[in-house]
Length: 108
Image (tube, rainbow, N blue to C red; front, side, top):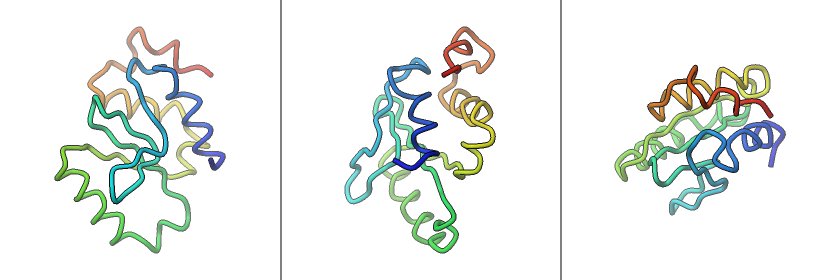
């Protein structure tokens, strides 16, 4: 895993947000960085190399959405510089209060 993936995984693993996430989830023909199958949520981290693959990422997202998944994307820089903000966006997407009782579990 890349350092941003490691940083985010350390906060997602073990149901730390009250939801089971897996990493490197095969959703053929794609592999999602992180996904919660029960919540139908895919989280993708985009590094500098993704700037050149915008059309591919758009098609990939559309394919996953057709299959009933919601897809949210963060840049590696977002994760490394603002992990708390990233986690809040994820909690909001999950329909959970980012200021609620799960907030203490956001700490490493």
